[in-house]
Every structure is written in C-alpha cells, then in structure tokens.
Length: 345
Image 1 (cartoon, rainbow, N blue to C red):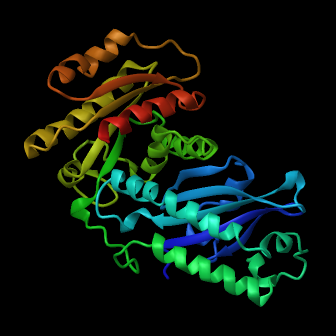
Image 2: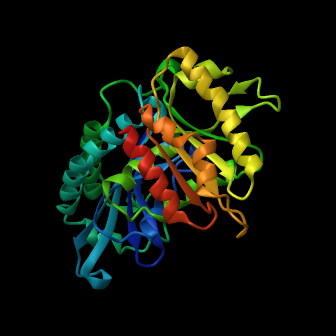
C-alpha cells in the first residue's frame, strides 16, 4: 500500500504518553504527515473529527476502553485514516464528503478493537524492549494475529475503490481558492496562521469547522510580477488557467493604508477582467482588511466603494468584508473562512 493513504492506531501510554500502537506506514517528517501523537495529546473527547494538514487530510476517531489497570478506569485510543488530497478528482467538497463518510467505519473498527481481551493488559507492558516504532511488536502472536486481521479488514473498507499508487488528479479539474493582495500585506503570514489555527481547534466538531479544516490544502497565494503583466499559480503559468479553475478569492490589504487597498483592488481587477473574458462562473469573494499595530483604520465607506461591494452584490456575487488582525484574532479569521466555505458548499 502506498503512502497516499495511511491507517494508524495510537494510544495513550501512561508512562511515555501518546504512542503509536500500529501503522500501515512509518510516520516520519519526510512523509509530510500530521503529528498524530500530538493530536491525541491535546484531545481526550470521544468522537470523530476531521483534521487537515496540507498534503494529507485525516479522519480520526477517539474512543475509550474500560480497563482496571488504567488511571480513571479507561484506556484512551485513536484510529486515524489519512489520505492525500491529490488523489481526488474534483474539489474540496469531495474530500470532505469522502472523509465524513468514513466515520461509521472507524466506529465499527473501534468496536472490534474493544473486543480484544488481551489488549488492555498489553498496553501496560513496559516497552523497554521495543525495537521498532510500533508497540504491537511486543505483543504475543495471538494478539498480533487477531489485531492485524481486524486492521486489514477495515483498511480495505476505508480504501477508495480506485487505484492510489500515483496521484490521479487532472489539472483541468483542480479547484483552488486564491489569496490576492499587494506587497507586504501579510499573505504568507495569513496562510501560515490558518494552518496553526486549524491545528489548535481540532477539538471542535461542528460541520463548518470540519469543512474549514479540509480547505487548507486548497488555499494558495496567486503570484504576479511587479508590472502585473504575468500571473501564475502552482499548477499553471498563466492567469487564464488559474482563473478558470478558481473556486473563490481572498483579497487581503493593509487596513491602515489606502494605497494598499487600491493596489489589491487593481490586482484583483485584472483577475476579474480575465474571468469576464473567459466567461467563467462567478466565485465568492472574501475581503480582509488586515489590522496593523493598532494604527488608524480606513473608513468602511472607503472599503465598500473601493471594492465595489454593493455593485457586485447586485450582480449576484457573494462577497463579504471582514476587518481582522490576522496575527491575533483567530476566531474572526475562522468566521471569515467559514463564510467563504459555506458559500462554496
């Protein structure tokens, strides 16, 4: 099985903390996978949730097993199924729906694990003789055999029906949400902070939060040269293709600088003119005025006039403006992104 999909079982060892019980692939930094142990360390609420991490998206199920040996009388375990977004042929909603559909499978998997009588005593065996990354290595043959039979059965149920050895995404089907803004408005900071915010909010299990977590993979900063004559994105080297496969836009500017707002509007106007020439569908637009160091902010009337918000709404464009300090106001950032994603879904 390739690393395009990975199934992993972790547990909370009461001596060494979060540990890997067994995984279909060795999880290392080079695999660009999320730190599953860290997820378990900060989440002790039983249930299923989606967690996004750039190249990999995951669906996780945390559960407890009754145990007389454990503190509090319960063992904490988590099943994680992760999959590369690149194998999906279409847009972010497909990724979310696919992962969300696997929740019942993970719950059944957990139920079968709970029936392994030798499991809870084994979790308290000292792991000093462990030579691999998996605790299962130290189990007796009966427990190994029983566990791996269950593990392999559910891995087959979770796996997509099509082959996953190589990514199959067609460039013509890629959907992206582009971040657009003038120089030094915080585009890269915004993108990095979104990744951090979604990690710190993995305990949230409401529908908007879960969709928000999946969209991380689809966000990208649209690049341009100083003359605004050449645009490119990761998949395409011309603006026409980038615009054709866009799913939404985030316009970012310095809320204390008129020139910054005007520059962002100028850049986006070129993008939107290209969309009109291509007769592409209208896509939602999220506008964020980035608050800088408690400086005086531009009046809302100027923002609405500059970005022609009222006029665009009358044309049927879904557009909304949020003033946010992207370094501090995490909840407002999430609210803005939830609005954007809900307009797409």
